[in-house]
Image (tube, rainbow, N blue to C red; front, side, top):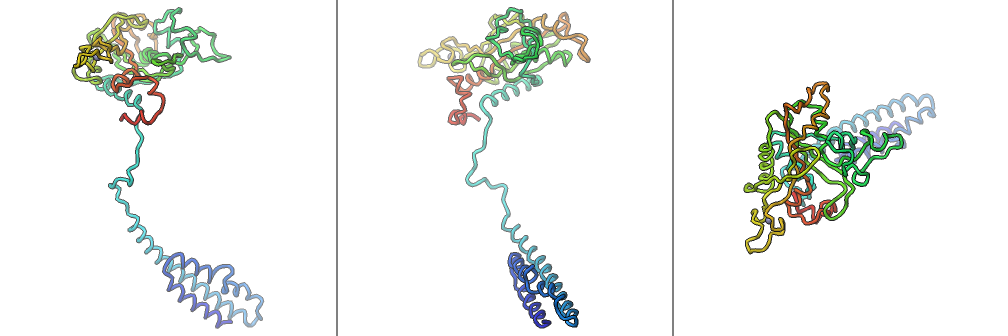
Length: 365
Ligand SMILES: [Zn+2]
């Protein structure tokens, strides 16, 4: 029996020395030292041997097992180090090479890209970007913006009201709506920050309209500037800078009288048509389709902040000293992101912006 043990030990030693991979070595570990291998079986059988043989056989088998274990561990270390080195050498990746084939990457939706562009323009003029809640109270959406109680936009068919069984009574200032414009943030911004204030407020707004020129959800970029010596000329200069950055360096702007509840005076702002250079007709003499021969494109609404609006900003607020209509003046404007994108990129139908057709979207960015 002792000879058999020595034979196994010698055989195992030769096999381990010849093993060339970690995998082969693991097979040897199972073959010589695994539960069903001969050597461990012998060790387990020692108790059944005649008493005078037990000591010698047990010792020899134990020594052989320990020797093989040590040998396998040492060989595993050598093989592992070599294999790691080979793997590192072979797996080297040159991260400066392009993927093969080059994988398509995503891009911003044309509306997001347009909104970011508009934000950048006004950031460059010294405005700060603010965002606000899309679910808004009637107070902020209408009351504080000088909408009379009978203003048509308040109609339950013209605004998405949030119905809550335990909520405030319909018509109460606390009733909630999906904001119909980004203008509520004018009030929230003034409540939170004392003058002077220069902010732009981008975001989604909601109205229950759906046809070729309206979608129930759309985007606005609102602007508000309040300071001590602001005039309509500052508004015009700001919007001229916007028009030139967006539609070309040779653009002009034109203000036409209009009415909005929260600005007085209010204006519609037109930008000279970039397609016909404001002439209204093209080189071949045909009428410009974009401005319909007008030479001007209606782009946004604006005006001086109505002094009544300042009265809605509490004067006792924590750190804002309030907005004194005798001291401050300001202007505000609201711009449709969809309208800007359609003009900038010549998109003929508003609904294309929401159809998620990749053939359309992949043209931008
Ligand atoms: Zn034109």
